[in-house]
Image (cartoon, rainbow, N blue to C red; front, side, top):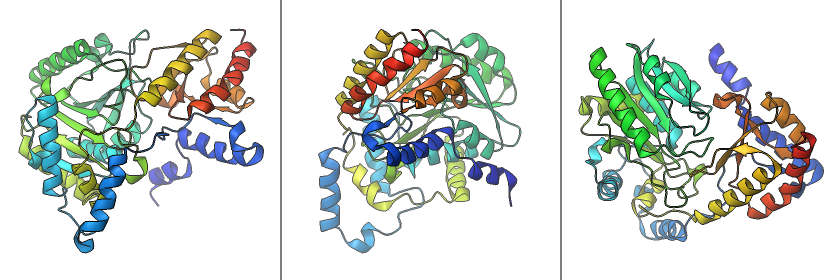
Length: 394
């Protein structure tokens, strides 16, 4: 057997390991006594319109056509609806023939990196980063180069980026709003990034692409704006998922948008189609393709997550913990009062607090707390957090 695949299969991601532990612990002490902050699984119901559109499709559409294959890259009318929405909302060039429907953002990233990379290429990302980026990049035959971010803001450290870009650099992979920090890269950061990538592409005589992972784009608070990257850097691929915006993580529906103004855009899109074919990611789920075509611009109730954030951030800071303010997504990245985040998480388990150590996110000495849970669970968990803080003398 393929030993690398055996290794990936025999050891789950740290997030999934903690999630599975939580399920077993709930059977022992009762679900109400376990405070599981491990998994980014939305607790908010999908918008009512999603249910209504699905019901209408099932009631009125021809079942054979509704559940049948679409084109490999996705139904044209669906891609047209997405393209029109992107153009209208963000004021950028878009074309349905540069949209590729996928089974969520993970598939989008795997396809995009495989379309771009060859053996020996490097992909740069910024810590903290989603744990699976390394798996996705290595599957494409490339090497992931993770750079530390500014520790005060988690914005990009451009001095490190300038040193890291070299002739092997094929792409920069970024995620905003960020999982696990909740930080949104501001417009100044994006402009500096676009300028540096343009200059470095010219210096090395090759295109350095930007791959942007955007499942949390709509989950922002307090009027924070998420810059749309193709408006700043033409050589961009947008990887999007409806898992978080519509609270549909189990349905696995998303897309890749190749900027039609990118260098060799048509060839790049065909490479995306080829990578989708090679990985078996053709014809994303038909029913949910047709549903999202009618639900563009609709989101779940983001205010629920904002209330959770405010409650949790306020309480943890009061108890003595330190964290960077999350302006988006539904994660809190907390600095641990001891260097070993794994040891901190083990102590947290004594109080049935299930937290994810930051090591696999590329940041030692931090834990991720997913606050996409019920507000009631957060309130019930606060005494446990307070006891944990007291154990460290905070």
